[in-house]
Image (cartoon, rainbow, N blue to C red; front, side, top):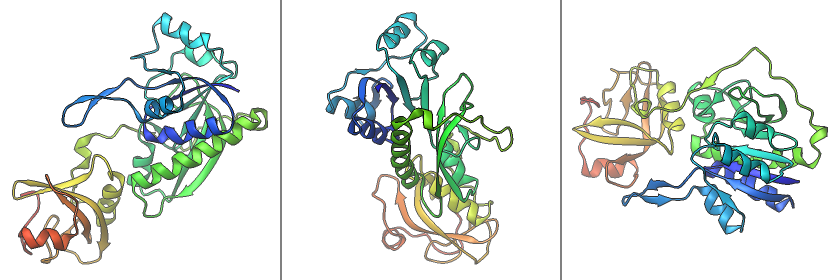
Amino acid sequence: MRIIYMGTPQFAVPGLEKLVGAGHEIVAVYSQPPRPAGRGKGLRASPVQTRAEALGLPVHTPIGLKDPEAQALFAAHAADVAIVAAYGLILPRAILDAPKRGCLNIHASLLPRWRGAAPIQRAILAGDHVTGVTIMDMEAGLDTGPMRAKHVTPIENKTAGELTEELADAGAILMAQVLEDLDAFPPMAQPDEGVTYAAKIDKAESKIDFTADAPVVERQVRAFNPAPGAFFSYGGERFRIHAAHVEARSGAAGALLDDSLLIGCGTGSIRPTLIQRAGKAAMLPGELLRGFDMPAGSRVDD
């Protein structure tokens, strides 16, 4: 098939690679424009743009797709279908209608649950037991289009980073299967029941609220790993927790319950197993405590 591929982050890279490997003709790749990144704030191309250029594919990075000229260029590719994976821009009707078979989306949730920008993090935060990917036809609404295929995976104790990598690979495989015979995967309308919305993650959410129950705090740690990182403050410094487990011991919320960094929560407590002091590398709690005093009885966020 003649395919326009539209994606930006690492999540979208396996899909591109899979479709190239399957022998499809990628007539154009669309990605978000390069953004300032790193200490020098130099412009950095997206993971999809970088991979597409390495594969020798033509890449377009428009700021938007509402301009008639941009829409005319898109239509001129005469694509059979456009495949969209975490592209990051709203597609106007003219774009949705341009490919012969429309636009298909790789969405990282089991629709209609978690429509929107941050489905993986929201599924972890909510304590969902399973999630997955859905291949759907795109329409004007926010992730409201009819579904063609799903893949289910358990969340277990995975971080957002681990789950993103797993779902990226699963979505790539599923999309390739759908494109082998699109007519064998007829679109099915999403049910009206069970709709939830995955709002974009606000950095303010990554500050740990120790008045919440310990399992909620532990999910927050996993949902914000690797970014933006769940954190607390102590002694005027910020500490990011990369991993933690729940313990039954109770104590005042935010209080250090022993000399080994057990922190009280609303009910129960959490013990960080990988922690990062601002400006330092991530380390085990024992390594941190050898050079930084955090005695039992003191409190975080003071």
